[in-house]
Amino acid sequence: DIAYTEYKPYDLISMSHVLEHFNHPLDYLSNLVEHYTGPHTRFMIEVPNADFLWGLSLNHPMAFGLTTLTNLFARCDYKPIAIMYHGLELPFPYYLLAVYEKR
Image 1 (spheres, rainbow, N blue to C red):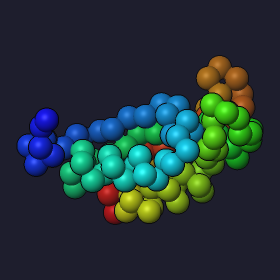
Image 2: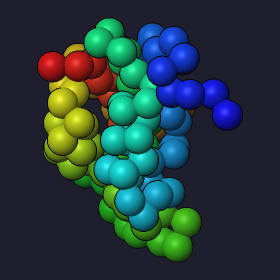
Image 3: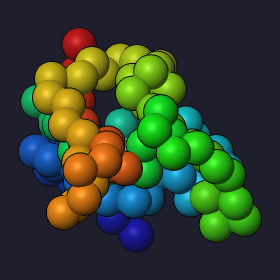
Image 4: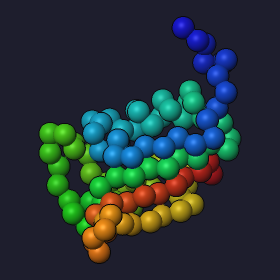
């Protein structure tokens, strides 16, 4: 086992369609912040946009819109610095992409 004191913090942690699959996303995010981040670490997060198309399922027990995602990151002392909606090639905001940095 590598002790957590021996790591070098990541500059960027990217999660594309990950958070909506966890029953306890705050616990998961808190662990990442505690063990893998430094003062300049940023998170790039993409989730289905619950503000546009909302629905929970067995494989998506959580749903995030801009407010809920930003509130989750605020609980870990992070703020949004970039926000984008997209639908791949469709003209609908199916997905939310956001970048967060330490407050």
